[in-house]
Length: 403
Image 1: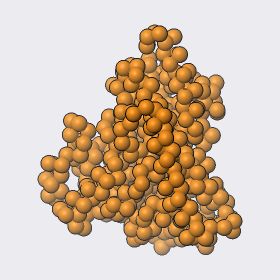
Image 2 (image 1 turned 30 degrees about the vertical axis):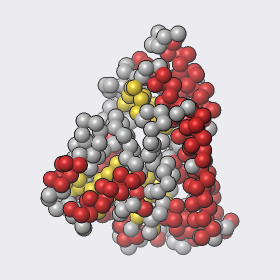
Image 3 (image 1 turned 90 degrees about the vertical axis):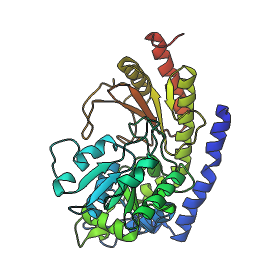
Image 4 (image 1 turned 180 degrees about the vertical axis):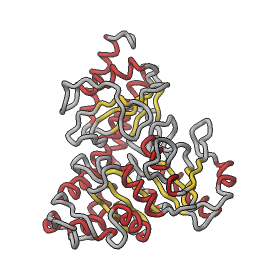
């Protein structure tokens, strides 16, 4: 499919997503009074409470908690896991090894420091098939033991696999409930919000979590995250974030409500621009002979575009070019460095207005074989095009691609 047709397809998807957002704003009668917040404990923060209900509607969930106190998507996910799971419970990942930052949360790596393993929570994972798909044949055996929760990672993360479409997540949730009706289905929804018509909570997921400096923040949210799903489970996650007895009732939004409401309003357009940029990255590098995931025109369930560059030199050249095309910190030279929560040194390019924002154009790569680059975000795809032009020129100059 030509790039112009792909761009038109993603642009056309903005309208139904925006209609859902507008319907939520209207249903909750959002007004300027909701932009203010209270100080101190945050009790009775009308704007925060309204924002929670708006997000719940947009995410097609019974309840949601949107909090600037979540420092990242990983923090929101951790609050959900620690809030719901109890000593002796079993957590089973259906999508293989989770994203790097969850490894220490679970207790797969690091010194413990209060991981799930430290609290006696048993973790198992169902390895993906060689094609990177959920192992359907192994699922029944994996769920032969009592399991409190299954973890489904929607995005590919740092894995070379297809991201999971929402319909596929719904199928998995249905299968899990058939095998173990009381087992909870939790979805790491990072990078996936508003990419498809439905969210996992509309197709059977009991609980989801994500970051506000990814899709739903619309590039305006200065930080924070969310949990959404069954009201009782959302409350358990909030009790972990604050304290039992306080739960979702505490936490000032520090007069940031307007940015969070406005970011959500802009989110459908920002997600579409990121997807158009991802198509451009995929097509450009595929035409040069590099492996890309997903392929141009393939179904997308998140905003991540992976490119297998094959060498640390190529990673560094591309990241430097992307950084030089950034609006903030264009003069900086990205170098591999340790990052809290990650197993490998990371090479990151992202001169974004919000530090670490992946709803803005950015790219990062764990410095390990086979040297995959993960590109995400973008407020307008013209920015992605400019960054790509500079990256290709730099690759040619370095002799890493032909003239």
